Structures are given as C-alpha cells and as structure tokens.
Image: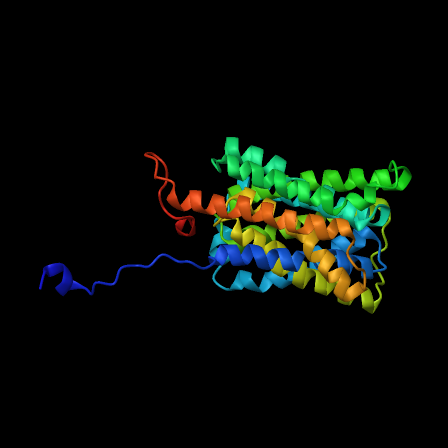
Length: 327
C-alpha cells in the first residue's frame, strides 16, 4: 500500500451539483421582499411612517445579535467605516421614503419596474470598479431581465402619456432605484471585511434616524398608531426586512453585487403571485408573458457569473483567501 493510501482514505471531493447557500439566500430574499408591496398596500399609515417603523423594528430585531460575540467587532470599527455606514443609511432612507411614497402616486407595476431598474448601474460600476467582470452572456442576461420587466408592466403604459401625480410617482421610483443600486454597491464593498450584523445594524440604525428626521421635517404623524398598522410594520420588519434585506446583505459577501441586483428583478414576479393569492388580483397577459422572460434573464446572469467566479484563475498580487475568511 502506498503512503498516500495508508495516510488517508482515497475520498476525492465531489463537485456540488445543488444550489449553494448564497444562492438559496438570494432566492429566499427575493420571496421575502415580494411581500413588501402587499404589506404597504394593506397599511393605512403615511409612507414615511411606514418606512420609519419598518426600519425601527428591523433594527430592534437585529439588536440581540450584538451580544452574541459581536461586541468586539463594533468596538473595532474605524471612524471612516462608521461615516461610510452613515452615508449608506442615508441613501437607504431615501430609497425607502421615495419608493413607498411612489406606491401611493402611481401603480405598483410602474413603481416596481423603475425601482428595480438599477442592474444597469450596478453591473456597469461593478465591472469597472469592483472587478465583477461581465461576460457577454452576463450583459445579455441583464438586458433580457430588464426587457422582461418592461413587458411585465407594459399594461400600465398603454393608456397614454403619464401625467400629474403618476409622473411624480414614477420619478420617485426611478430615483429610489438609483439609491438601491448605490446601497448594493456600497454594501458589496463593506461586506468583504465586516460580518453581517456589524454591517447591517449600524446601517439600519442610521437609516431609522434619517427617516425619523424626514418625518419631523414633513410633519408625518407617528403617534398614536393603530394596532393593525403596528402588526403590519412588524411583518415588514420580519419578512422583507430580516429575511429580505438582511439575507441580501449576507449574500453580498459571497456573490457579486450584479447577481444580487439582477435577482431583485424577481420581486415583480413574486409580488404578482402574492397579489393573486392574497388580494385576488389576477395577472394580466403582460405579466404572464414578461414573467418567464425576467426569470430567464436572472438565470443567465446569475448562474454564469457564479461559474466564472469559481473557475477564474487566481491573479498574482491579489488576496486569494475566500470571502468568508476576511473577518
């Protein structure tokens, strides 16, 4: 028997054929975030109040994890990291305030297409600045996904030009989408060196503070709040917040920012399905046609990027440790 065989059994590692944990996390996040528009529609509170309580309750839910061995990480945060997370929290507050407000001014479909149009921004910036290189297939996958969302929401644009409050709502949704792209890109950078709780909790707390300031500046009523709305706020914090955005933040350390951004395009599909089940709203022919196109684009962009990342040769001079080792 050879020394190699005597030293340890011949048990080669078999390649995994199933979905990786980060891929499952992104999928779960898409499903969780699909509930957001449903909960928002059910609430009678003002948009800024909805945004404030959602982030407040999400922050409170994360707070216990600080005492589970993470206190040292918070103490070790550099001043520039805190300022950067404050900036991300500010951008995130604008995202929530503008997107939720847009849902009261324009249709859900129009709002969703504009708020999820940020993969173009994320993919381009990631390609040139974050070394998340896009292949031709990646690029076409993003284009196909965006085209699918346009088809999915085409019914909202067949009635003529948008005017009045609908125009303002679409503008707000578009700017909210830009904010979402900045949020994803910044999170991708910081999550390479920070754990999930150490990154997410300060960002959520800063976001809550900025939303509170916006509520004060606009005279938004925060107290008292009906029990129905408080329950909905808790559900928003638990499902789209903890399971949605927090899972996205976790996955940012293990997949590219473009994968996460493109996967967000699955939210219109999930929201449409939930609308059928919970609101009794049947999807239009545009949804039935555009839905599969969106899913095809997501698969093309996400799966190809994952393969490229696993097979890409190591480059001399770059940190070769896996992302999970960067603590």
